[in-house]
Image (cartoon, rainbow, N blue to C red; front, top):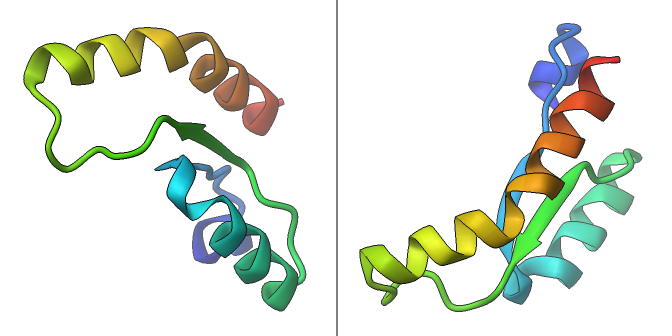
Length: 70
């Protein structure tokens, strides 16, 4: 929100564990969430598993970037 307030498009990537928390935070701040959620958990993933998650999400991530910068 700080970045958006300064005119810098922003978004986030989080695991699905945080969907409800992101909605609640967005409501409390009065903003629409601009985020991408990937499969939970993240912490104990191997490098190869993280690469797979990133590949699965890359089109959505790029879409978010395009959306936020237009």
